[in-house]
Length: 357
Image 1 (tube, one colour):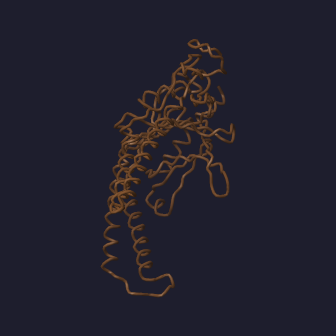
Image 2 (cartoon, one colour):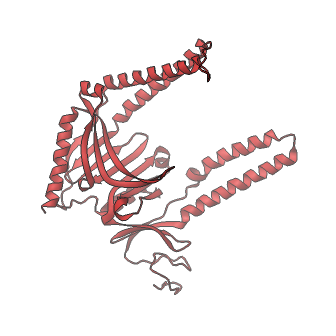
Image 3 (tube, rainbow, N blue to C red):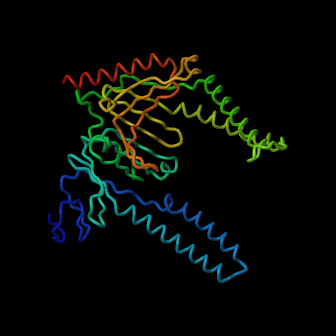
């Protein structure tokens, strides 16, 4: 391939290795992560600046040491900002007619690529801070047991929802494998906050933690009893109780922001609590669906519906690298058996129609 600007000969790429000119060749669109100074650098500058200032004040009576520490801190902050900016500017994600490719343009090296036919799911993650700066993360999943590639994560994408919809369109996530015009929701599941179950669960956890704290305070490392300072104990329990109440009400508010939309060919999970999270998976990549309930949930007719998918990732542990399957959990569902049967019917119908068309 020859660059039309400088004439440099190089392997196929969307950028010229010599002059970094953009070369259009069957590229639908490209995504370059944005380096936002206020979002990326400012928090680290504040933290590192405070640490540097504190260390300098510690050595206030040793002026030379204090000045050296201050200079080292400024150098560290500058290097950190430069490295962050360079990291964001060197990667570009290009989408052509059959695959997505992550390229390091400074080295003209393809870091990772994934065919659209290998993509098993797509995620959209946006924290509240990212939403303020109009940034977001987009993740493309696949099955590492089939092609050996891991997921592709595009961090801090500008105008993330616009690119998210573009990616869904080009990979065919919004199209049914049977009927290209089928885009209607056939079933919507809205989890409801079960007051009794959540209250019992919160009380149970609170009692266990309270007992554990008492045992820890009542016995030393040699298992010898000693005097318990009940004043300190009750202060700790009061703080714990406040945190449990806050957690309880936060979870209650979160339930209002969650929904599960079932189409004839895919399912979409959406959570708008403290940011935005979307996950989409086609039914053909779902391996199993089952119900999970504990004793209390069975009594209250509440449960969790779990879906085992073909999405898998490589996880590094002390024993080596393991392949972990991605599970989708639909939590706190009322009349769980009835909802489970409805979901099974939708998934099975989708797979049957796909196999017979």
